[in-house]
Amino acid sequence: MKRKDNPSSLNYFISYTDLLVGLLFLFIILLMSFALSFRGAQRQLQDRLDDIERRVEIRSELLERIARNLRQAGVRGVQVDRGQGVLRFGEAVLFQPGRAELGAEAQRALGLLAQEFERELPCYGSQRPRSCPATSEPILEAVYIEGHTDYRNINSAQFPTNWHLSSARAYETYRYLVTVRPMLRSITNSSAMILLSASAYADQRPVRSRDRVDENRRIDIRFLLAPASREEITAPGEPR
Image 1 (cartoon, rainbow, N blue to C red):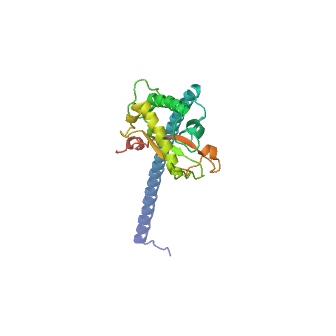
Image 2: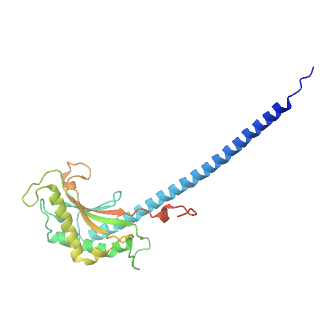
Image 3: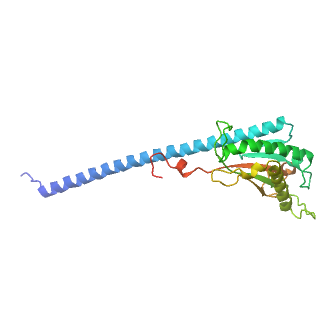
């Protein structure tokens, strides 16, 4: 005797199958949408990384150009740290041990540096004169003149701590630069903030090892890159 299929059971099975197919189709659409979004985000992130690398390279070219011009003018002991964006002057270039007064040779070196800054820095801030290199753009957030000492405490009447000595050296370097080239006081970044400033770190930021006293007694001039703007971060076509 043949078994008759229950129509209601068969309809239920068909509806259940349709539901599973619909859910599977929806899952595939969501998966494709996620994959496309992930690919777009990955491409956007790569674009940002490429832009950072480009800015770092522009900064490195600037530092190398300034250092090369100073060396050609006879300034000794100028170094460039490309990774950190630092133009470095050892203590012997500018100051006598335990002192913060600029001698004649130091004043000559800083006079040449001020001349380089007057020509170069506006090209990487907000002003950008017509004479700027074609590769220049407003990539700088700040230029800090940093005073650094070694780990040995000075403890003198004039400088009770290394903080006092590093601060005095940083300020004296800054003061001389803006005195010989007053225009340096007015150079601004893309946010209309003054570009050139001074800071001090005593022995808190050694170059490599705290025991390398000759390297750690120094003036660093650090070129900080400006962060990307909202327009640069937002992908084309997205709301801003």
